[in-house]
Image: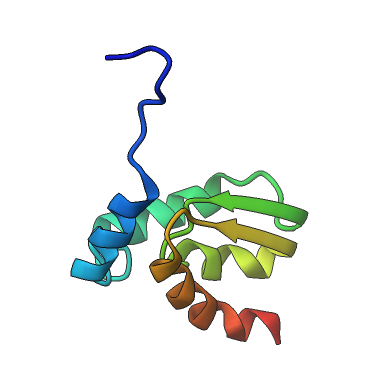
Length: 95
């Protein structure tokens, strides 16, 4: 392994994964993921935050749950495919 090269997957990898399966890690349907999101939200020490940043938001499942607790929420992902689903899911959050 070359120490000068980052040990990460290229963005194209994730584009390909999401093209092959719209929910490859079962974020929308997995009991494990549902429990992980609930545990994450329960671990937050405050009920509301002025600003938050979610890295790797994927399809926006956690984003949708986190948004009501944030004045502003910036959620990002390396792949555009899941971001469109996240945008659709969170449109209600913006109203």
